[in-house]
Length: 179
Image (tube, rainbow, N blue to C red; front, side):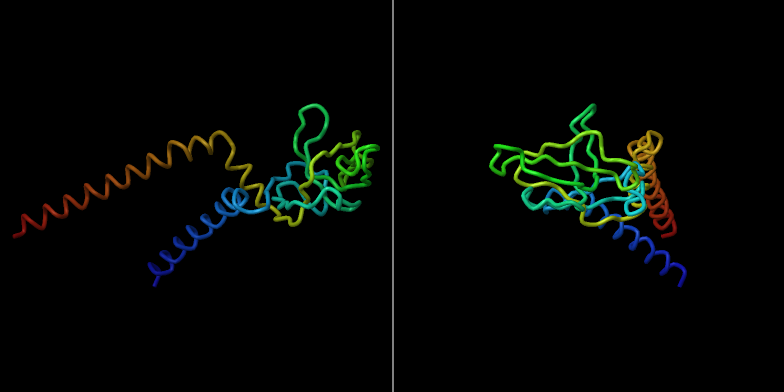
């Protein structure tokens, strides 16, 4: 019975890992969504740090105050953030092809010190949040963990395969000697 439970747990872990791999790495390349880890507390309490946010596209012309908008900030390192839209308006003379957007982190005291200019037909907005999943992703990206994942675990896997072949070979030899 314990052996069956262990086998079930192993298969369940493999299925969960494969589902997460598909959702986080493959799905965004095949379907109209993106995933991103929220690294700061600027959107607390709704999106705490360590959450994975799932974004989908919507026409820029339908972006409204209250939407959580994902974009490259127009200053410094141009990092990607997700902040709430305070207001959005078409740029004068753009005929609806460019918009100015003011954003604010929910936990921040004031609006962001910039306005974003959007010249694309679609924008990414946050549709769902998965708390704590990003903590695991950030942990997996740490250098010691990367070392283990790239070198130590594959080495252990190859070693265990070679060990099982060697043990099977010895067992096979023992059976032949018994004849």
